[in-house]
Length: 273
Image (cartoon, rainbow, N blue to C red; front, side):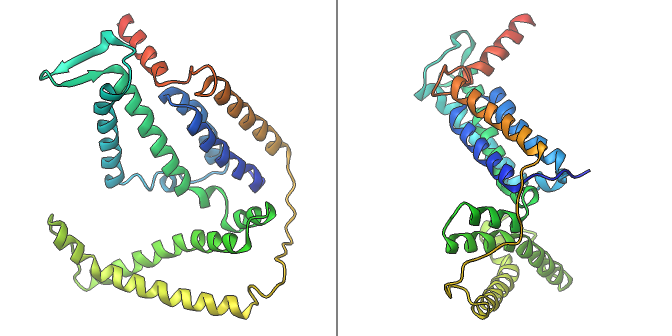
């Protein structure tokens, strides 16, 4: 069953998750305060997990691994060591630290969470509702239009690119090289038609906007009247509690939600074992 949220509630969710991301720098706390509220909405909205995890391609996964390794190795050179009993020298140069491990984990989790949030934005909030919310909070009309067009065109462009790829494969197009220069050239049969199609659509869009009197001085109106329901009030209260916890225990407060928290948990497990 797909539950209905007021779009303003969902916009507030994104604001709170980004806010928590600036307050909390710990893997376990990020799982609780960033991932959990987003996962609840994805579950209640019955959003396809395949679409949510779609951006986690091989390239993004490799980027996440590189991001983890870079922060893991850079940590001992730039930050204090809190768990000195869990640090090891490898080859008299490379320093393995538990703090660096947990620091790298939280960096990657925040990166992946924000990436998935932006990727599933239009799945969680329909573009028409998102544009209506931006209009109601008095964002500039030109900015609202640009955001609406940009977000609406993403699925159209993906579909068009897939159709072009199928057509070119039927004509014998293949990529069977590891040479990056040759691979870049091989993508030309896809990118050139896609760019031409985008330009053609932009011209049609401009003509359509002009025929409808865009920038003619008339104010945009909407027949939709949003009203908060019981579920919205419960979820907004939940999000406010999350934001307060992030303020109290995060970097501006007691600094409990620090990457040393996950390190202490791992250290406790290792000591028990």
